[in-house]
Length: 461
Image 1 (cartoon, rainbow, N blue to C red):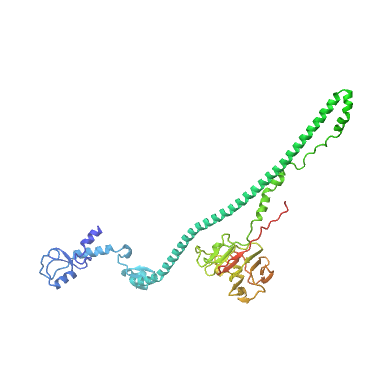
Image 2 (image 1 turned 120 degrees about the horizontal axis):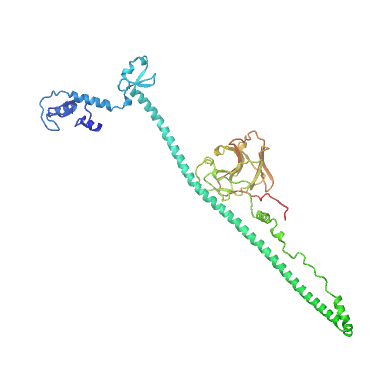
């Protein structure tokens, strides 16, 4: 309805709402400004019906003008109209911090107040919004980057799951293969003992059968002589008597004739586990791939690291190193820890411990030895250069949390390199602050954590 009425209140030439409408003799309405343009060109005809008009003094169409004004006022949003005076809100009271109309300005409630034109206030606020808008756009970009990272992490979680599943299946397949070989060996040992002792038992049975046959013959001969006549008895007495007196010794049951069942099944699982220990190793430190810099390649069992030119597929996360090509081991929880690291031909490395919030790894500090450009340094000692008495091929790191001590040595030559005892900057390991094994390298030759045998001994045979 409003659209239909608006069409009737528009000048048919300029299509604006009538402000000063005039009606031509033909009853068509136009803006006076449009009419003036036609008159200036000498035109005296209506542009709609081409009816000529002679007089230039055409009166305004007051009825249409009032209708247009009422329509314009009605078209103004109710929020732009003063609810008390039905006037347009054009001012802003700085004292009451509210919009007012020109009648409100002169009212008693606003006596002595300071007013500003609404346009001026809006302009100032526009500037404030323009200043704040870039921050909102920047924040939106941060959210967008964060969501993108979350999507990357979601995809990487699937990759991690596949890698972990593959490693678990591989390790369990090796365990199954070991158990299968061990099972076959023990079953073969049982069968071998069975065959050996069964053969001995068969030989014993054959021997006993022959002895029994001989004794049966002696018994039969003796019984015949006892039933014979006197002359025959006396003639054969010595022969029969000698056979009775030369009887074979009493047979003895075989010792250890049965299978040694206890040997085969006693503590079987434990013995298999002990045998398994001979083929297994245990790493004192496991690298955390979620902290590894993208240019570090970790071994499948997470016990060695090396630098690679191409970045690994790892999304950003709070625990990951971004500035240094570094990686952390698991948090040190108990009192004493010892681990050895093979540095070999690597000529750019750092090994030790650092502490701090694991969600800010690039800010963590600690105690470690680094080797770069053929020189050894200890960063916690203001990067003082230091020359060890031997060429370092392996680093042993020892940390005693209770005694507040960290020491470094070369285990192959049993050479002490450096140690710190109860330093003043030893961290207060509470809350999120923990101590971690630390590794750094920008060299392709790997740093390897030396495995140790499982620390279980037993006297069970």
